[in-house]
Amino acid sequence: MQDIITQSQSVSLTSSADRYQKPGLPLLQISNQSCDAVIALQGAHLLEFTLKNGTKLLWLSPNAIFAEGKAIRGGIPVCLPWFGVNRKDPSKPKHGFVRNQDWQLTTLREPDTETTELVFSYTASEEDLKLFPHAFSAKLTLRLSHQIDMQLEVSNHSDGDAQFSWALHSYHPVANLTDVRVSGLAGLSYLDNLQGLKPVRQEGDVRFYGEVDRVYESVPATQQILGTPNLNITGENCPTAIVWNPGAANAAAMADVGEEIHQQFICVERGAAFANSWTLGSGESRCARLQIAESTPK
Image 1 (cartoon, rainbow, N blue to C red):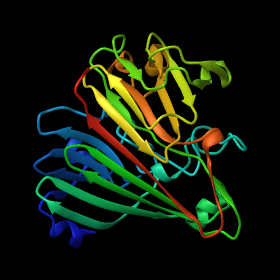
Image 2 (cartoon, rainbow, N blue to C red):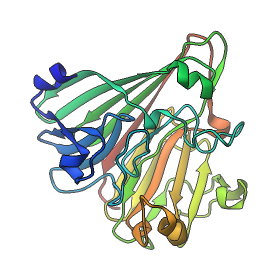
Image 3 (cartoon, one colour):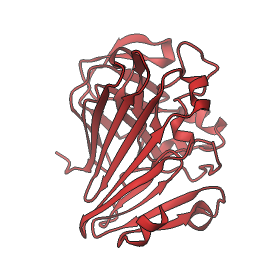
Image 4 (cartoon, helix red, strand yellow):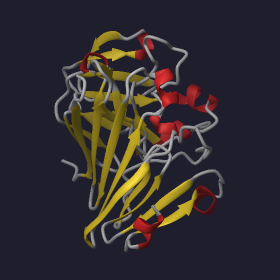
């Protein structure tokens, strides 16, 4: 990895100690003519993304914990090979295990001074098979320019079919939680995790007047966050959208969030979960793409 980075014009190696005064993890720092970004090798986790005009597209908790094997609160963690609580065995780690383990940086490209493209890979270990009994690998491509472009590829290396549910669990900053809205989901039915996954019809835009924890299946390609900043979130082969904010009480009880911090962010995630989960045959691979971009308010 060091050889790859040494030849780069836009990527440098740093650490959580240097960047956040919180020792624990190695990080990559990206600075090109379009954006500045930070990536943790643990989880191939994009933590920060800021356009050169100063607009932040991602939120990172001021109380995030940087420790080996511990999920980092904020940015875009990769939840895989299952999303949320494991429905067959709730004792297994929430959101799978790849977000808590190191990925390998395999490729770094700089097609122009405004674009940095990084490719990370993950291969399930023998220890992983104790949690998820299917050999698999994943590849995550991050293309960072005037927007975030991500591609996730999952490959089943086992002898039989394997079911994967996953999400790119993106955290986005908001200036005013009670004013922000999420459009592009009106008229759909969602599974309300606050009511035991009861199906509920979405009337109008999603608003945040308290805790929100919803899973929308088979959604349109694009949703918009209408607030400050205004964002377009567009997925390809990402049929599920998850919208989440912990609310005041839950946030105060989370060591890596904290009292009143819930007002700083919302999660609008895309993936393939619940009825949209992927079933891959032996030797089969599948790709999904996600684009996050600043938009002009209507």
